[in-house]
Image 1 (tube, each protein chain N blue to C red):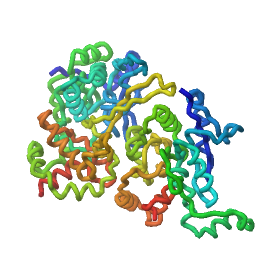
Image 2 (image 1 turned 180 degrees about the horizontal axis):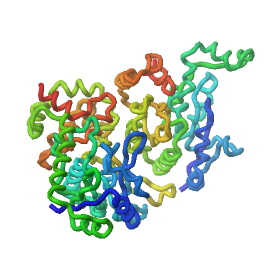
Image 3 (image 1 turned 90 degrees about the vertical axis):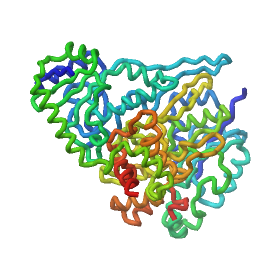
Image 4 (image 1 turned 135 degrees about the horizontal axis):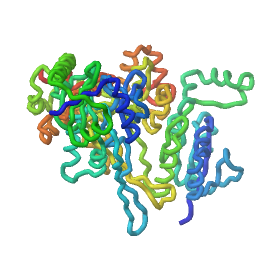
Length: 342
Length: 246
């Protein structure tokens, strides 16, 4: 592992250099919370946030995107639309990087998705260790306090300076070209471990009352549990838990035609399995008509179906679903602990 | 292909939805290339009773409106309700919760006896409506989408998910977290959560989704400090004609 050190007083210069040379996206405050957006000046970039409203998945799978353009001609000309403008994503917490790593595998499986994969390839990801824990986060219990891949650089705030871990050669080149560096000592490395475990310890206050690897088995025995019905009776079917989730990637595809009726675009937009029409098909049939069946599906998806593909839960413990759910029934910690209790 | 003939009509309303159509700007010119507008009182002086598609704004608030609406229905191959007053009854239905004699006098004073009134209702309480473009006012893009679908002979796809979806995509902090309350969780999306994005809250102008969890919404509103009367008021503002507001 290669570590470097940037003095805080030199950090703004590094960010400014990046802004001068790249499109930089990072975390900014908004109404007491945080969102990812364009960074035009070093002072706009926030690295001491607890959690953002929605995850950085929006950069690789935008809420709404055009996949292709078509012409309504006899030979129906089709032009694929692929975005691959390079950009820097500065300030991604390890749990969100873990989610991106999972999505990278999902979108590369079967027929690889060029829209996702090329955007992903075009991004330089600069991670940052959390300095604060959102009230509903439980990433420490999900094994997402740190990640070993999925970032080009990883920053840790050490007070007077940042320690930077180099993840890839692209990251190393970026750093060497644009930052004033000092070598990090073994003491610095040891201090980073201590800082990381301190914040992780705060996050551990929330978590499962049993080993998380037991969740797929637990779900296998819970298909008919009364909790699905009981909890889902309060579900607003608003899809908030889906939209804010860094590992929800379902989408709907629509063809939109221009007013000239000669040209159009194929659009995909985020969909969510909690929404009433998610599993509705052309005949009018709906495979998950009830709130309870949709509610149960989400937990089976995160804790069972995707486990079979990823060999891990498709939940990284960010807690966005828990804090966004008005009737407060979306929290995986509460639900899985209740299921375990029986 | 002959262009479809299109007519616009209005009943009890502010005519703001027709104004949205006029405000389509560049797209309006494209619409005018695709269709023949034969009646549009707010925008032109010509009139014809020969039309294929009728866009009707406004609610039905008196018995004599019914005959006129039935006439439009008989002339039109496709009837599209335009805006909350037409699709839901909208805010005109607030008067339904008062004595009709009282509201008549309140509005018309000593001339009240010259004016008829009855409990307000949406168009589909009087005639079959083929499609609904919700909103107070309507969303221009959605209007254009419906026009395109009709031109292609497709059913327009009107959203059936709550405003929360679009609000989260717009990366708004939840209204409830800002100490206000919001009808977004049960209200049909399609507006892009414009009111919340501009710092307000969702008033519910696009009506309820097909299967709203009204009980849970009431509980959420109560948890955030609304009284039973306020909760009822939140549901009645735009959806007073529906069962949940009774």
